[in-house]
Length: 59
Image (tube, rainbow, N blue to C red):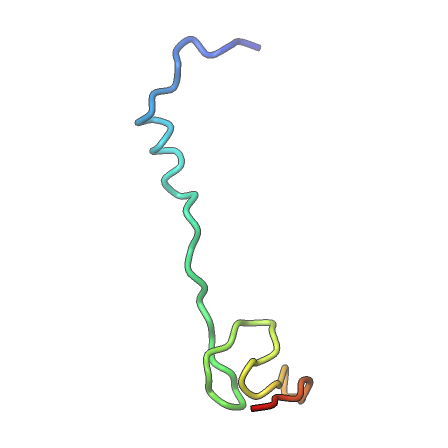
C-alpha cells in the first residue's frame, strides 16, 4: 500500500468536510395536542405517545 505522495491541502480537506455539519432538529406535530414534538418521543406538552397517555404533566 502506498503512502500519499502530496500533502492534502486545506482547501481539499475542507471541501471534503463540507457535509459534516450538524443539522437542526426537524420536529413533527403531536396528533393529540398539535404542539411540536420530536418523532418517537413522548410529547412534552400532553404526555402521550402513540395514542396512549404515558406521562403525567404537571403545570
